[in-house]
Length: 204
Length: 123
Image (cartoon, rainbow over all chains, first blue to last red; front, top):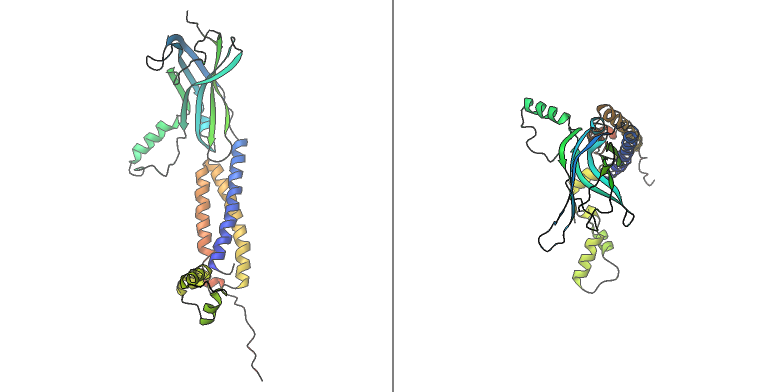
């Protein structure tokens, strides 16, 4: 402790310990105080299965399913909770293929919802915006946890490894969330459920 | 090369000469301490005209307590405000303050200098 360098060394090593303690306190507390989520509503408007090819004329024809859905769920308390950086929402379909007795689970749609009051050091011209503008944008960002998707389409192609949905009768559709914290454990859960399993039509 | 006296120069030259001049020079560069590389003014600021032992003790205990209180304050403030970034910012600012307060050899850290016995003279 007799020289400046030694003091700097001592303080920085002690500070590192305390930063780690602080961050672990934050992560534990935020994990214990996560608000509960009431699963929202997922309604399937339409499900069409048709033969088609994804690539050009060299490719084989296969069954392609296209989905239309309505999603309404309120994740506002979760998004504005202590240690949330962003939420990752994803819609999955899970079903069993009776032909080869395989369970499948595929992601059909997803969305990233970032926290409204997130401060990004990389953002430019933030201070230049006028006061009224910033309050307006704050207000518009306030409700981003209330997810309301109307007539959403599946973002990713829904198809089978075998090329046909012959063995599939019903599929369960669920919207899950993953919560990404600033520091700590990733947690996940169900954000919305469909009222019943959906019937997957067969192509003749 | 400011501080090196003739005797230490002799000491730093390896005892088994390499045979050619360049090798000796390079090995000297690797061995020489920082005191030989930095100018004396910078060295004095970094190493400090050492602060007294009482202040050293004070700094080591006070910095521990300060950091513990600081991290508790950070945690409570961030929990109330609901923002993790706030705690990091407060901690950073507090740490900067601590470093500025404690690391340079300020005069208030030299209030209790060690009093050495007077040098004995041959009677």
